[in-house]
Picture 1 (tube, rainbow, N blue to C red):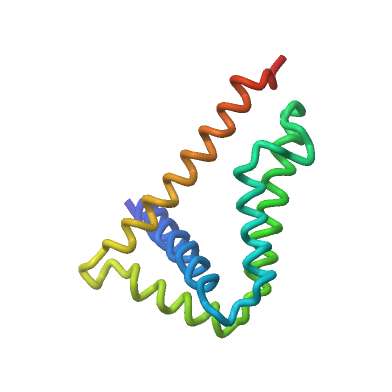
Picture 2: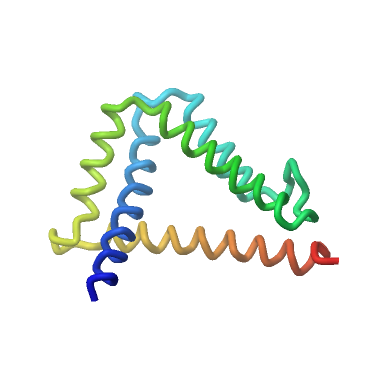
Length: 134
């Protein structure tokens, strides 16, 4: 059971980090171009248009992962450190399971799973209906 607790702790930390990133982008001290960079990274992930078509099985998905990761990492690095620290503190307080009110945590976890399921469905659609394997 110690592996399950470690996995549970890492999942909680990941969900808290995602929520902290969301809170930091809602802050008025974040510059407009950082928000645009984040929107472009998420938009590229959800867009059916790619720089490298998904007809190339490995490289088609590699550009998606690489560009989205670089966009999120770059926008996260451009957010002021004080905003990130405040957002992390607020996210930890709101998502703390010890408080007895896990509603925010459940919302973030649900939205994260919904995003992952949507991305899986989009990739499945591309594979099944765009004749990638042929």
